[in-house]
Length: 81
Image (cartoon, rainbow, N blue to C red):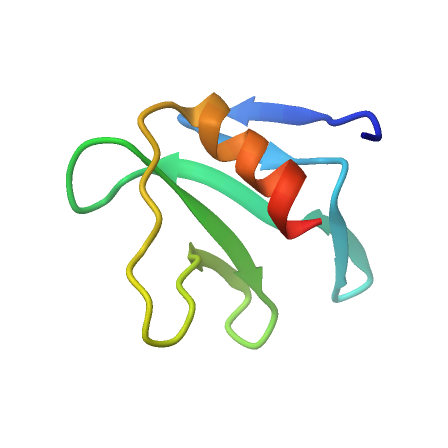
């Protein structure tokens, strides 16, 4: 696996090893944030058409919730890259 670089900013973690281009800047594609609906952590993805992060949900599927931020980071690094 390639080197990962997750940086904590406030209460969120950002994937500085997985970047996307938005308005001429390189931004982290994924963030790990506290579950807005309860306990645990969820994966957020940057949506360029709205210019912000939102929880990752596949159409027709439930949101993945992880007990720790590290578990969510591992999921991104192994399943979403």
